[in-house]
Image (cartoon, rainbow, N blue to C red; front, side, top):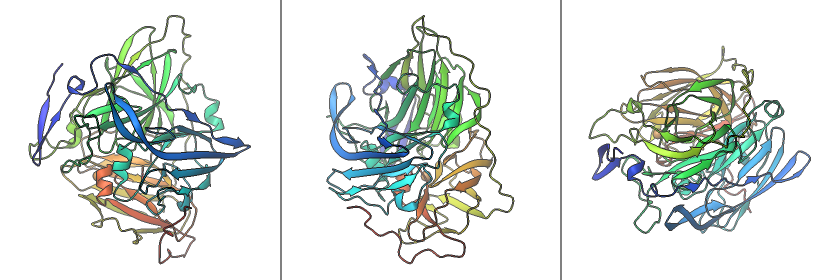
Length: 491
Ligand code: C2O
Ligand code: CU
């Protein structure tokens, strides 16, 4: 293999961009891709109850050594929560850690008091019990901590899990949907390890917890033995800082069927697909019996618009990695039928007279302000979509932008030569240096003057450094409360 591809000077550190050949835990026998258990909760009609416990443990991320990790209902990562549109969801989140954390339902439209942002601390030994009705269409969402200043570290230690929202229209489509068989959750993360196998938790200058070792569902060098000719992967980038450029080793065409917030109108053919921190894509790939193919991150040809300059970290944009080796099914696996030509008929939000707001992202601030837990940055006092125009004002750093309680369509994407695939409803959009994205944002309308929602850069080091703001949704003419949150909310 190519070995060392490039070295970047980062402050006093040299971060070596690399391929899988150099990565600890690769080479040798691959291990079977772990499938997080599907958690259907305890159901009575449309009321469904989940219990999540944040805990510590030891995990075999690397093949030859154990690593201290955090997880939900296990030692690392968490179960995949499966809910249906219209469900009344109740979750008891118990914190068995020695320190406070929070749990946020990324991508969910829901009342702010249930959103699990930084205003909803769950102290050690406490249980927080949010409840809401699922308003989202079928989609792949996720949950992770949102403790102000510590989100990155808590997620890096392993507090993250997937949420699958189902709905009736999607159930009727002929898409792979046998969880763990042909419908495969794929949580991508990256870590750095110390010699003894423990997680290296030192923030790199400017790069925070950017890792050098990619993992799939919590292990290195994972392998998937397909039993069907068509496989759907629900890919979640749960990394702190890393962007991946997904491709198969033979550059085959695959189909994108869903974005962050649900199905695309039609499947879209791709050979590469960028996925930034926090984003999800659902892809479908067809496999020949017995063939071997690898899902890789191929690095960005254009370095994601990050200048190639030895004094600027390249943010790992040039790294290429093996993410998952795959073997096709046996000869007698049934032929897959044609993918549906139309998945959904989505409507564009009507934004002709919409309120417009601008957000300028620069190093650790949005509109020149850093996160302040008691400052309301935006008040929304109506139930209409808005146009949010978001600019990455840095000329050499990437950012991305995530909005809670919302989904959006990217109406325009300007200011960069990097071509990003941004089809469908999203909740997080990548912003190469200089990029401006014009978003038509549709919010869940649950007016509550006391509890704010967040918008922020989802590169978690940036978020933790203060690239975050708060919005409050109120009844027409109302004002936000003088004091936000209650500081409690858990027992
Ligand atoms: Cu993954 Cu504020 O979110
Ligand atoms: Cu950022």
